Image (cartoon, rainbow, N blue to C red):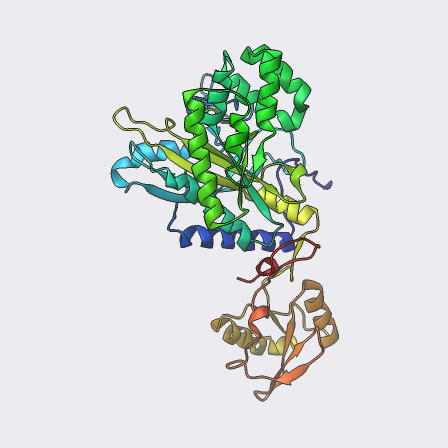
Length: 455
């Protein structure tokens, strides 16, 4: 059989990398639950017409089709979900009578997008979302809360420092309206492409698609250049000489978010007025996140406020959420050599086998150790002890146990060579060896608590 080719955009991690992924998942889940978010999983497919209601994502959806469908049955009108927000909106409407509002949920699940794979971009990847959804109204302070919860996640992860960039759609749309834009959605989409295509092409889009003059387009670029860690952006925007009631509302809301975040977690949230977000369902605060020193990867965490995405005709369900691209983050951490797992297997102890006739004795030792929460496996072959030790070393297993008969046992730390007598009913390894840990291995300006994650 020929060696199968890898499918671009569908990552499959090696065992050591998968351990890193699992530790990240455990950390994210722990922080989310610490803040009272309940776990939710939705189906993988949604009606295509529902997914395409908002935003420019029609070319990204994978359509569901049965291979042996009869004529006329090939298109079921379903597609794999491209994010977790649209499925959440459907879920809330469908189950509103069983939910308590504001509804706080987290969701860690795979999503699919049919885009060109490149560093940090995949066709199948895992997202970790938190959202807070209200019935008819949703308090503004939740827009601060979700940003700070995600900032806390980043501080707990073994990764470079992250900065959450925030803007407000009302601010941007009000500014465009104040300049006389004929299509504010087109202006938002143009600004959203600034990092990808540059100011000259964005200016062309603003003039062609949004109906702005050269001077007005230049002011839009000036707005997009404003970035502050505090509320000083308000005066900078005012100095551009644009007025509109929606702009005033957006400035007030963004100022409240940045001011509150700066008071509680200085430096974690920064106002960046070029942040637009391409999806049309966002109506207020919007977020994107950069890893310091790795900005070229783009945003690894994004989201925002949405007021009209979910409605049953009687009630609307406004929400705010933020989503971490776990697979994108993992690809940076692993691909750029920033982190590593201490070993590639969960096994802490390998029990040696004296000979095949005595394998049962080794199995009994392994059972005793496992009963006390110590991950253990038994050597696959009764080879010379030296070969069994080398087997453990290749797999990264730190300890080898030798059942030497007459209830006499010893255990060897193969990293140091230290070997001591041990009782399988009492012996316990150091806590740091019980399970693999994840360590930062690159020189990054991370805080001390970010150096290692233990389960």
